[in-house]
Image (cartoon, rainbow, N blue to C red; front, top):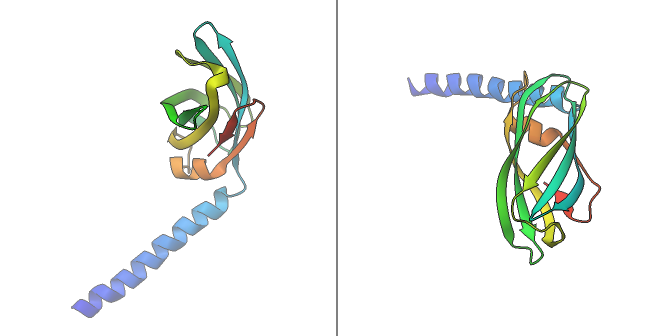
Length: 144
């Protein structure tokens, strides 16, 4: 009986692993472009703009990402989930966010910590994270 379970396990798990590898292979040439485009002080808040382009080959119904903001001492200042909503395939979109009570010049770095939501057919948040292509047009660092 034990031999039966071993044989079944060997048959099931390699096919699962193969299916996952095929899924990654199919999505490897797709990208989700996110650019930190600007940051401007507006009163007590830092207003940041992200430019996003969906080149995944599928419409993204909802997209949100977790951002960690570091201060000038390289310490975590804030952890936020930014929601962009729908990202149509091939469409470039700009989204602006107000970072309450933060001074832009004191922000040293933005880190995309995780993709929280990426509702696109055939994609998981993990696959969307792997598809990220980042760019930066500010004086703060930006990465994942």
